[in-house]
Amino acid sequence: MRIQWPTVFLLALIALFSGAVAADEDIQYVVIADPFIDLHTGPGVGYPVTHVVERGEEIGVIKRRTDWFLVRGPRGKEGWASREQMELTLQPSGLSVEFPDVTLGAYREHRWELGMMAGDFGGATAYTAYGAYGFSKHLAVELNASQILGNFSDGWSAAINLTHTFVPEWRVSPFFSLGTGIIKIEPKSVLAQTEDRSDQVAIVGVGLKGYLSRRFLLRLEYKGYVVLSSRNDNEDVDEWKAGFAIFF
Amino acid sequence: MESRIRYIFLALAGSAIVFSAPVWSQDGTDAPPQVIEPNVERRDLDVAAIDTEDFELTGFVGIMSVEDFETNAVYGVRLAYHINSALFLEAAVGRTEVGDSTAEGIIGNPFFTDRNLTYYDASLGWNILPGESFFGERRSFNSVFYLIGGIGNTDFADDNNFTINFGFGFKFLPTDYLAVRIEARDYLFDTELNGVDKTLNNMQGTINLSWFF
Image (cartoon, rainbow over the protein chains, first blue to last red):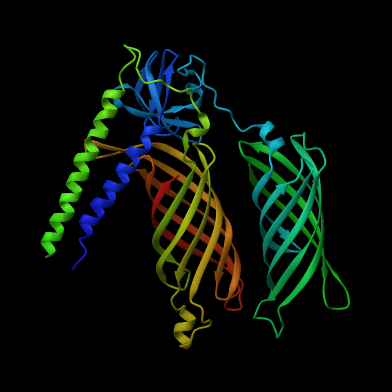
């Protein structure tokens, strides 16, 4: 039996659209309180306004993308309205609508951070991805993984850090970190016979963390690495990095 | 046999359309009231319950020219987070297979065995020209021209290379949750593959299908 691809496609399409219709049942409604609101074709000021909805009319809120809302007006016309205009609508109870924004307040209360940074690791380029969980406003545990790209060798490192934020109430606050991990260095094959090495590292760092906007924070840091190598002497490496994170 | 199966599928499809139609028409009659107080009790707005679609998952295929290593098919995935209507962050992974370089062609044997090139990057995109595009006289789509650039890593010839990328793209939105993107991007990295340090300039053209969630 040959598979009828056009039929399969048609069925998939129907499934897709009937799914969208089923989801519409939990639409919520608000009433326009301003003289009118503009409905754009897309989520942004650059998209043209194709309809307006007048005061007293009801709109259904279908979905949100960034600060724009896809709404369905009377006569079934759909369009995107800005948050500023949506805040001038009334709920069925007559109260005005508020869309709580993620602000500095939420930043001060946040527990989780997911971020990435890039910078210099002892003369090589390095990227880091990290995740952090805060036990309290001051204290957090952090896991990170880095890739190091140098001229003569490449490497990986993974570490666990404990960070202490000095003044979490401030928009920009200094922090201090202490950690340990492993580092793996792979010399490039062009060079003479060398072998891969994995070593334990001890890390101490200082940095600045600041609230940017919405769910974003900016981070700058310096870390000092002590590579506890199996050779006679330990090796010190300086690392400078900048990056950002999403918090929630 | 084949045509019977086709009829069964068509009948299924037909009945699905017939049954889903009343749902659509219900929306139409539900919408324009407010002259009379509606019987249904409206609950107050629960902002957290509004479906938020700030993420965009994309699959892509295209062609990539790896400098001096021929042009081949490239494929990969991207995940974007929309910060606001103008800016988005996007992480991407892509892979292509490279051909023979000129020197390898002359010598007759390859310099390295792993012929895959894999890159990943994190980039910032800017929706610089949003608007509508018209297709014929009757159809219009939302569309946007965007600029994108970022940093990442390219794993090529048993070596990792710090990579800068930049480019531009055009995005069509046939529905509010699907998009088709056509993108051109350049990936730049330094390599010492032939013993000489040089910058490789790798152009990539892709067709992307995106889903917002």
